[in-house]
Length: 304
Image (cartoon, rainbow, N blue to C red):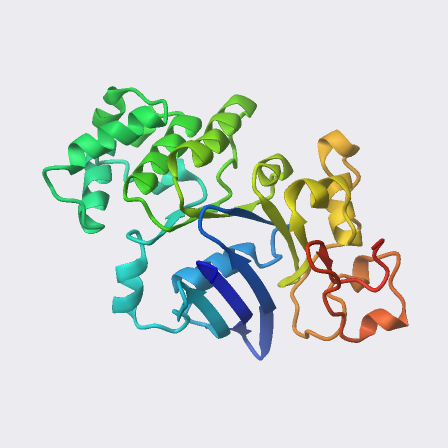
């Protein structure tokens, strides 16, 4: 049984007289000790997916389907149930870690407070904070520092240290390399392998190099997974036209942009990419299933 199993997840938002479909009939599985990268443009539904797992959707959001954590459906659970899971078992590394720290409280105090909220005894928290900072390549002085004294890379590594210290079973990393230089990006990605132990890692990212560090990749577009499989296979030999477009838009692949934009989806019929796809025809106006097993792709015209 997978640690995280999402079945038929759909999330929509009321917007005036319209309904915006942000996630549509999404399925995925993630086992303990495995890593999965969710990639796609802004507006593809990546962060909405994370919010649905954590139970932090906006008030105008409605979710259906199942989010099974260790076999238990937590979608729609009451706040007490979700609070018992957040931090202790499911931990989020937010975007822009530098701004996520409280600027008027020392890093060490924030780390130990987080640990105590997650059940770490008060007497053990300071030593545990120091231990994980060292594992993440940071000096003990960071404990006494305020967030404005840290670089972006140091701030992100301190955030990884804090989250890893409580040994969550599922770690969600939302754009963990955003705004970091090449060296800092490499250091942060190396940490996921070194310090999170047997936790499952769900990485949400625009960074294809970061996605390559994961075991598997799922490509999200218009709230639907259009391709998934082993990371190197998906990124080296993309089957879906959208995945191929993402790879071609990377600076190292020629930086060729995909024409058009995602837009706001108020209907969920047919291929979500057909308005931007040069291969689209009448067949793409109907429902498009996922083809394949290890390499899965949602396209009638994919190079399978």
